[in-house]
Structures are given as C-alpha cells and as structure tokens.
Image 1: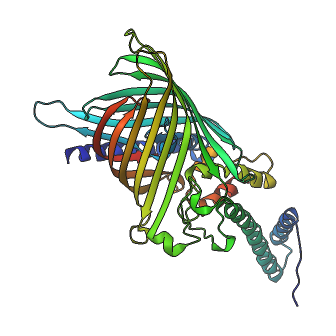
Image 2: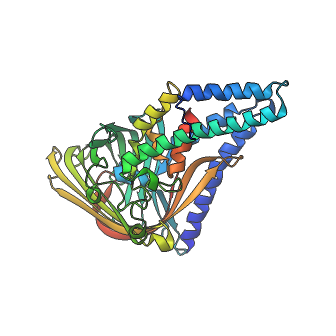
Length: 129
Length: 322
C-alpha cells in the first residue's frame, strides 16, 4: 500500500520543530527519539530538495534544457548555454523564488553575474532564505 | 621573457593583497564576538569590487585586466601596456546595477601611443526580462570624465549600448549571447565544438575641451558591434580555449569639431587560454572566482573611446579578472 500526503512548506517546517521538541524532551524513550530523528531528517531532505527542484525548474525554463538533463555540476555558460548577459536576467525569477520563502529576500544582478555552476545558484538561493 | 616575469609578479602581489585584506580584517575580530561583523563587511566590499579590462565595452565586461612591461635593457626607453578598470557597485537590485569606476588605458608599445583615463558611472539595466517575455534588452549606459594624456585634452564621454537577448523560445542555434549547443542537451557535440555570438547597437557622444581649436567640440556617433567566439575541443582540454573575432563599427552622425564625420572600424581577433582561481577566506569559503587569461590578439583599427589611434598591431598578454 502506498500512502501519499500533501503538505505545505510551513506545515513541514512545523513538523520539523515538533520532532525537535520531541527529541530534546528527556522523557522521550530512546527508540521513539530514533524514529523522530529519522522522520526529521527525511522531512528536512524533502524541504531541501524542493528548493533545488524549483531552481532547476527556473534554469530549465531559461535554457530550454529538460530538468532531468540538468546536473548540479553543469556550468551555466557551457553546460546550459546561458550567456553572460542573459545570466543577469536570472535575478528576477530568483528573487521571486527567494521572497516566497522569506519576504524581502532579494537577489541582485551583480550577484547573478558571479554565478558559474548550477550548484552556485542553489547555494545562492539557500543563503538568502 | 622578462616582461612575463613582471606580469606574474604583479598578479601574485595583487592576489596576495586581495587575500590579505580579507584575512587581516577577519583577524581583527575577537572570538567573543562570534560571527564576524568586520569580516562580513570586508567580504561585502570584496564582492562589490570588480577588476576587468574596461567597463566602456559591454561585451568586455567578461574580459580581464591586462598588464605588461618591457625593459629592453639597453639605452632605449622601457615600454608598457595597461588596460585596467576598477569598479565598485553602489546600487544593486534585481533589475539594475549602478557602479562607479575608473579606467586606465596605457600602451606605449605601439607606434601611436595610447594614454587615456576614464572615470565615471556605469548603469546596467535589464529592459524586460526573458523569464516572462521572449525578448529583453540589456542596456548599458555610462557617463564619464575622460582625460587623454597624449593629446592633452579633457572632456566627457556618454555611451549607451543595447544588446538584444532572447528567451529559450527563440530558435536555439540563432539565439545571441548564449553558448550553443549546451552540454546538457547535446553532450557529444558540445565536447567537440561550441560557439556563441553577440550583437550590440547604440550611440556615443564624445565631448572634448581643448585650447587647440581643431580638437575642441563634440562628436556623436552610432555604434554597431559583432563578436563571435568558438570554444573548441572541450573534451580534450576543458573549456579553457576560446578563439574570437570582434568587429566594431562607428559612424559619426554629427561633429562640431574641425574633424570630419567619418566611419571608424576596429577589428580584433585572437585567442585566450583561460584559468580559474578561487579566492576564499580562512574557512575555505569562496568569496569570488578570479580568472587568469593568457592570450594573443591582433588589433586593426581605432577606438576613440579608449584613445586608440588608427593602427595595426599584435599583442600577447596576461590578463586578470576579479
């Protein structure tokens, strides 16, 4: 049997904080704490990967390369073919993405000109939220 | 050989200084203060500084600074070549960047010597955005004070360049600015050959103030630029080699100097070998990527903005971009 649950990002974050409280509580049995820990890491991984996927989605739309074909080690210029001037345009969708998670988060054109690899884009977004 | 050693020395010193600024600032922070505020500040300053060949030229935004010095050793004069621009971003936003910058262009190794300084502001603005539309324009406008130390003239320069850029909906192989084919799409072909091209249009106005009547006044001209670059054999050598052809055409529209309106061209072609240097702080966290290039270039024509008179020459140089 496969069970699928749909949860929003803030709900997942709430689950993480509940798990943290549960783990830090001295009355929790060690076996239960273990389960809570694994649940916490799973949720955190999901949260982390959801940002990665959104960044890849933007890059895919920009370059015309399918999301499945993009690797984190690809360079924006040679790997995805995004030219130096067009790379600056990434600032607008990246700002939109970052402000979704943290209001007021901004990504500037000059920051985008320093991006080299796909992994740089992901870490830039994560550093802002 | 001798000037190569000079160049290496210059770059080494520069690299060390850049790292030292950061390290020394970090060292000022005591352990109690935890996350370093001063270290953070110095890092921000380093992130805002750009060192390249010129800001005047939109496509050269990615070209590193050049320095070379030749001392013949006998009684003849030593010569040098310097193309350096230092910029500092004062306003940053998702749609535009405003930077103040200074540029120094020196070349005493050629027949008609070049000595020109430019100081002022450059404003980069993205008109529209390829994320929501299929087209956009990258606009680069600058206003600068200029000083030509050969002609002994001062003045100001206004330039505005427009580069069309297109979203991925535009036919792939024709899209300017982008590199074709992308490695992620055609991994086999990209390893043999990749190319990109840029088209740029705009206008320039140069106003000169001089006691000599024939030089005093202003010239307005139209600007067109085409640059094509190929990146061959990345499977064998990585993306370190680039071969380019660069053509700029200026057509004078109006002149109120004694100089007649005419067409000015400059053709450049050559190749570069490119190396990446990572500049990081004490904790091995990346601050910025620097770039080192070794290149040969053939230049034929004139560029009035950087004070280059009509002539033909070759140059081999080491370039540094930060």
